[in-house]
Length: 291
Image (cartoon, rainbow, N blue to C red; front, top):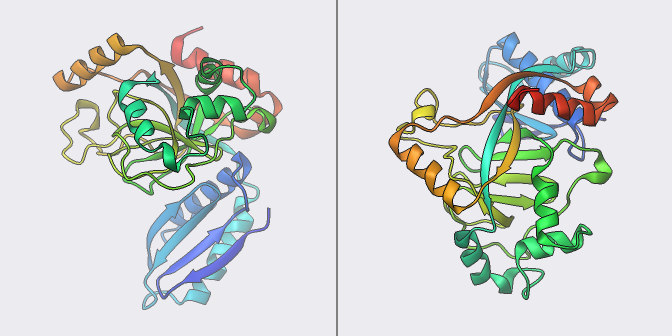
């Protein structure tokens, strides 16, 4: 991985760790941004990590651009030898696949889609070599996912599948963006799954919907009272397929303030994961559901 630095205007520096997303690139970016945060560099006002890159906002009246660049390069060298291990959590996210709301929406926008005669799930299944949409759904929820970035839209997580590269699902975005996407849609674009935190325009394929709010600026949802955004980079997600009855039940519990997401504290070690992906995933599942 060759890191590239570029300035954006007078107050930003953009750092590209690698040209494509990988867990190795994510951990390198995380190590550098953590080091920047821990160093408390005078003049740095904001740190924004992404999938295989990050952006730093700074005050040029406090720190000169060239001086900041030198500090970042020094921290990058130190990050090369940092442990690729984080303490995080694994969270179960219920998903109502092929629900009526995203189905209605996707049918309204077939003229913007690669496969106007099918559905998003049908298309995703076909281009990934599955015989049915149900087979694709199983592949989508059978393994955990890693939150590599939160943003673009407030609280929206980008999730990267924790499997070997050759087993990763790949689904392109719509040919032309939609003007509508239901809130809490579970979508897919490129190698990333996501959850639309709010209703709005979008271009990711739509596979289902979750009844579990992940962003609440009013902080009325019981598990979002401490912080309005549920996800943070490094979280691990396990999708849990549910039916309409379960969806309605969870919605009622969220409304009553009694719903609590299932989650467990875990340690994720990149070297151990790369050495034994399936074994690591089994341990993650054991932490979430018990041995």
